[in-house]
Amino acid sequence: MSEQLQRLAKLPLRENLKGISPYGAPQIDVPILLNVNENTHGVPAEVVESITEAVAKAAASLNRYPDREFTELRAALADYLGHGLAPENIWAANGSNEVLQQILQAFGGPGRTALGFPPTYSMYPLLASGTDTEYVKGERDADFELSAESAARQVRELAPNIVFLCSPNNPTGTRLGLDVVEAVYDAGEASRTIVIVDEAYHEFAHDGTPSALSLLPGRERLIVSRTMSKAFALAGARLGYLAAAPEVADALRLVRLPYHLSAVTQATALAALANRELLMADVEDIKVQRDRIVDELRSMGLTPAASDSNYVFFGGLEDPAAIWKGLLEEGILIRDVGIPGHLRVTAGTETETTAFLVRLRELLGQA
Ligand SMILES: *Cc1c(COP(=O)(O)O)cnc(C)c1O
Image 1 (cartoon, rainbow, N blue to C red):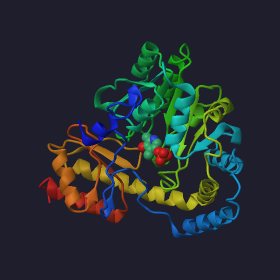
Image 2: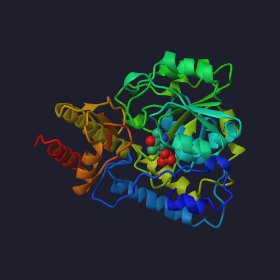
Image 3: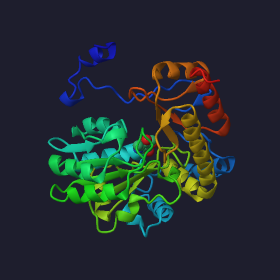
Image 4: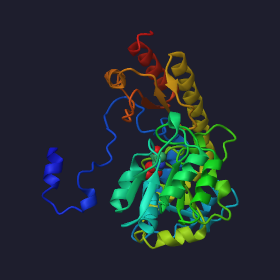
């Protein structure tokens, strides 16, 4: 037992939290951080200026609680998403992790189950334990794919209260067709299953990739989750949101803490949304680097997955741990997601991406 677990054992911890580890992507201070899929392009100076101005204005009334309904922000998010969505379709919290937690608080809990399809976002099982929801691991097809037929069959068999679909999926970077979402939704009819489509990386998808937002009309159990942490380069601000039927937001009002979105957070998010064109230009550049990584890894004889996100999951490595370590020695941090023969790298700036590719070739003996 680790020292930490031994120490914890002295406390009357809830049974379902015993023996689990907290979320722990390493935070190592090196020059090139390509490990947690942050936006590597930084916050543009103009956006920094807008945010600073907005926050200064908000600071003057920090003696008051913020707008509990974050009305202006919901309107701005609805406008950004389009698809005919109105402010009452939108809900937000401190990162999409908090949005997902609130969904589990409202629709999961003791005696209820949430189904995910690993390898997928490592926070789903942790959010489930935190809310005492049983996490059920579904199965994927070959090459980590998930077909509509297989996903729907598993939902029918397991009748979960909640299903997590992640598209593009973390860590594989691959997207799900809308046919999978539709099939899962229909399969969950009898069990009244809440279907969450986590589109944290949607803005990085290749042009013309449809969003599950287009499926919302008439589907009150469907929730599309988004975040400003990735495309909007705002991971540090903590703003995640969802689009769904208005009654979903009503359900989450029952579990959210009062005034959960600070006035500073609301002001920051609004300023970033007002500058979205500038921020989306960086997204285009990141997509170029992402496609470049896929091409180059292929030319090295590796097997990168087709990525619609800002990172690339690749296999064909004999000793991923050694590659990970060799990159770190050059100040480049990528992610070992614990899948044999594979690693995951976030698309960097052009310079960062070049440094990664050059070092990788050396480590593979191809320089
Ligand atoms: C990064 C990420 C999120 C975003 O989390 P935030 O709490 O909004 O920062 C959500 N889902 C997936 C799959 C992610 O990779």
